[in-house]
Image (cartoon, rainbow, N blue to C red):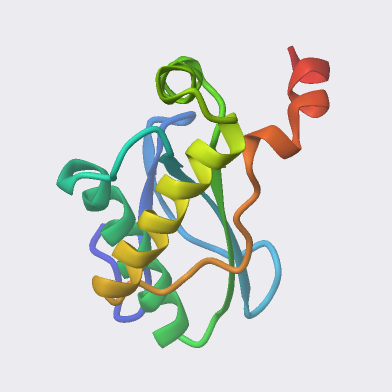
Length: 131
């Protein structure tokens, strides 16, 4: 089945089928996307994902949807901890540096910013509870 003008289809990995996108709320789309792990500068492979997210967001906005995007920032993992220890600085200082660099890069690439950027370190109790 070919999409009609203005329709978008996604491959649903749960059902293993291509399905027409229908928003949960009329005129509004909420998107949760994976952001960077801020242990180093983001590279072109990382930005391939962010450019796709931006393209999807812009298409949805073009179609008249109000888009609210949340992009997580992974600011604690083995690489961030190792990097902070190697430089003998607090983890937050270490990850803030690469987070700022990421925001400078997305601005230079003219990617639309998400509305929210929750940091993993701000949600550790919820993660522990989930596990």
